[in-house]
Image 1 (cartoon, rainbow, N blue to C red):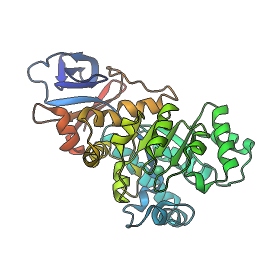
Image 2: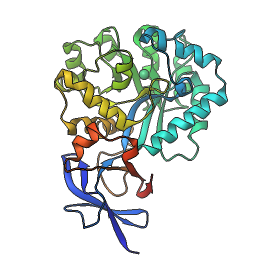
Image 3: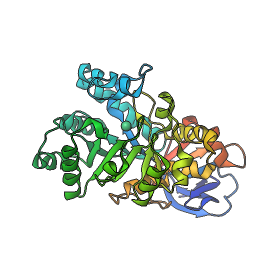
Image 4: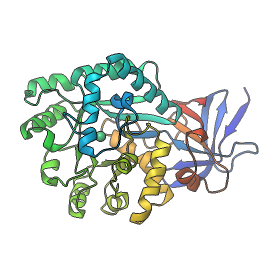
Length: 358
Ligand SMILES: [Zn+2]
């Protein structure tokens, strides 16, 4: 079978290098470094995106009305929670399915979803996955704040770990039991922290989280403590923008924190990682800015490091890995990726070595 090539650049651990992928039919047989053969498409090949924080369960409620974090997402009576109580299961599952297929089309390989609604919430995302090639890490949360360690251990055996709202929403002892139940089974424990109001970083880190979400209201000392504890932080720039919050990515990186990106609530924005990394780049400009390669790294390699807690995804770019091909126009592909490309420029995605043109 004749071989064809796609792309002119690769985004690797070291940044952009000349390179392309070699195909036999739709099978990726090799990721090659060096100058692309004549006729290879003008595109950059990136590792598949990792969307490190979603709540796709509220996609059915898109678009959310304007309001504060408290009014829109806080349990138990924020807009989101009122909507969750009134929508049908079919409505929720159909919207989740659409969000997952949106991720597949726009180059996301894996996502970490925080699920509300207890074990029923876990069942709903399982029902919405279908034949999708996208990997979901499902982090559930209990419905009762007095659940025993035994009940929490039973619960977490149904999913990949706990994804908790913030400290103030739960009794301390419940959070401690949930963290313990997750560790006992080698599962993840993630929690939102210091989104609008600064929370005590020692109390947060005392829960031994695998990662935190937001930290937008944290002090510089808090960020250093998180960096020293080697706890990654997932930042959601478009969700922050919706609520008028500065994502503070340059400050997080300066403090030495591993930063990954997530698209947050499906009712606020679509789970599209190219959009998210462009927002990360744009919204960081007033705070000192990000190098384009750093912005792309947030959506690719850093998310993979968060996932490495489960060791099911690597940071390598190789032919058997998940890849996304983004079309470009000029000679500086990274500037285009962070400022001008969108899902319309995703030419193809590869899952486990098989290329699918979009
Ligand atoms: Zn969230």
